[in-house]
Length: 388
Length: 130
Ligand SMILES: [Zn+2]
Figure 1 (cartoon, chains in turn green, yellow):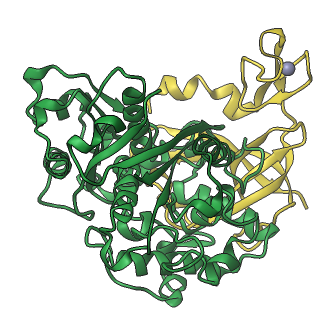
Figure 2: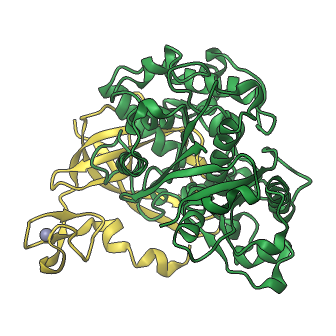
């Protein structure tokens, strides 16, 4: 297997982008990534595109070819593949690109993610997201996506010492970081009261416990590490790529409050990189809901089960804490264009490792981790990236 | 949803017909035709579930998907059936009544309506056992 490096990254701003369509979004992100790598499009050997549900969001399938075409590469006939694993689509697209380069099959590969969510009514987008869980045996009986995570929160709070205020602190911290990220959908700080006074969605989760509906796209370019310096002075090495699956339904899980797929992917990633938790300078985790970040930092092993509430309240996951979590603002404040999120996580860690993260920069960042989840934990993908 | 997609699942949704593996005794609801434990040596047969169990975890849905908006707020829970499997279902009770560990039994109820003239879906909900 060859060593792989990230040689270029690009990301649109995230938000409700009424004037941009699906095609404008991914072209903008792709152009930014190519410019970053000082690369012209005809050098691209292959593309992987993470996208959850263009079929339902914009009634368009066949996204791989569409993107290659609009990137001006139709006459080059490169392989272009859509990758889907609900909210983990982006993370899987990145992993496929890494595997393609590591295997020696391809050299310059684009991993992109895109989702245009606001062209349908909010009710329709919520319903589409329910398809990330089991439509027949969860969605059909009235489960919503927030409702499933709310059942994780109920179970967790019954068994472990997590207060409602500690849970709110996840969103407060992520908004603080989002306010320091120019691409974030929400750039204003909030307080614990903002969360506690927001609309109830699914008890105990309120509106500010939930990631928003977002339009956005992100793209990264990977190449063999041996060639990386042809394109950039600051290549970022891929130290580990791990993916795991679990039952599609929440009710069939071994433990409602543990995402075993996250545990498995995290352990594999640490083993592959031959690293320990103390080596990680910051991590982007999949905080689709506040409770998801609590579970993620425990399931990845950054603190023990049941302790993430206190860990968060003590500031250990804040900028300057023991392990800064979601310096981008996470899904909560940066936004969650589902197929793009996993790529945006790689974008954020790359910014940090290049010392380009501005007001949210972690001092002397050398190694970062990304964690992207599909559904309520049926897919998890973890990457570890390091400065060269 | 087409009528066939719904009708196909009637035995499961109306009557709680699942399956059981005769080789290892494990029960499956919703039914599986392949035992994950015994794999090719599994022997799957139909099994009618008794419909009793207890609440593992729950939520009260305030913001629902379109077909369920008329029902809010409603209680949604994971129920552990006495035969072993767990399932997600609505609990017919007041939001402040539901508790982890509460005993429940299945009832046959209207689940949702597909639009104004769409088909009405029926299925299994649970009620508290006093
Ligand atoms: Zn068996």
